[in-house]
Image 1: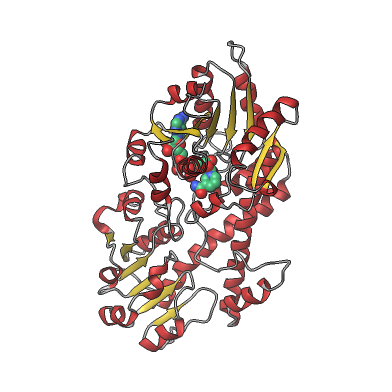
Image 2 (image 1 turned 180 degrees about the vertical axis):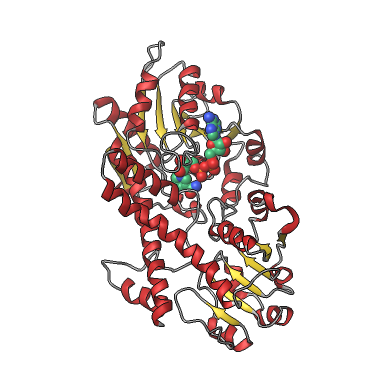
Length: 464
Ligand SMILES: NC(=O)c1ccc[n+]([C@@H]2O[C@H](COP(=O)([O-])OP(=O)(O)OC[C@H]3O[C@@H](n4cnc5c(N)ncnc54)[C@H](O)[C@@H]3O)[C@@H](O)[C@H]2O)c1
């Protein structure tokens, strides 16, 4: 099936944050394979063919350019891609369902199901289907059943291969992953298919990092991994609220507990709350799964992680309001950072969206600044029209502001000239450091009223 020039044809359906970077890495590491990425979005596919990629990720453009047009291709012709390929990766979106049974918790599988039907319709040879999207447990079995209903006598093996990359470090994560997980049926044909996927990754990843399991363990591991990561953030954020009450310093607490090797020092940064397209959705998916099996206590346990996250974001805005003499109406507040984390343009579920909405409810004059996410911010907040100002340049955003709120931990915010910013702001000038990335003592000496997360504020005026 593969053309003479290439050993194998690989296809990926879904050219988003997962599909694009993953397939670019495979193409880069495996010049012997022809890699095609298809998507229903003409706009996205067109952008993948330019230097203005549809997503920002450090190192991605260089990676794409190294193989685009050689063994990496982008197309909207889904059927042709399916026909030509022996192995099909699927990384379509699986958002939380917003309607009907399971609304607000379970995964919306409409894009997934459409893909299954596309494969069924367009295939004229056996295929291995690789689940890259995050899916409810047992989806692989369901998909295999749908595909086996074909009347063409074709065989489909569905392998679960969840993606563990983190946006902002996707290229590094794909090049040197902690592990790659590949789950299959434990039948002869299932294991044969699984081994073919293992062999693709073995082109650059040590075999010791390639873990295999059954399909359900693999699917469940993805939901559990994200739930555990989010749990750490909510755990330290819950403690940050207590630190503020008892004059403890959450950074000192995190440092002290993180030195215990059983706890470890990662993911212990208190913040305004986690965002991103995955954490909330995957926890809610786990919650829904538990509820489906009548495990209500287990469901409630995990759901609290999302509740603490919402609480942390609300608390951030409440603190702004309280510190600024209980009124922010008409006050100019510059939001530094709108992306859900540093080094990405992705704004899905960003804490900044919730912060902005809450500030707008209080009728503040919000100015949003971000080096990569202004375009997405404008889309997210279009209901406010010109009531929100957008300024890529943080100095312009802060000019005349009563407060600066750091919401995304972009490195550039650590090195701004805060004396210059102070001079341009209304007084008293407030800084709310929602990521604890700035030098608070230095800011206080400049004259700012400094409000970190989980540490005593440094204030010249006592708000009482
Ligand atoms: N973003 C992450 O960091 C990340 C990490 C790990 C896993 N995941 C999971 O990977 C999956 C994809 O996430 P993403 O962030 O890449 O989403 P995304 O929205 O960026 O990309 C999904 C793409 O699939 C396309 N698509 C939808 N239906 C299609 C169809 N029938 N045919 C062709 N294309 C179709 C969409 O147009 C979109 O471009 C999700 O299940 C997500 O939970 C995401």
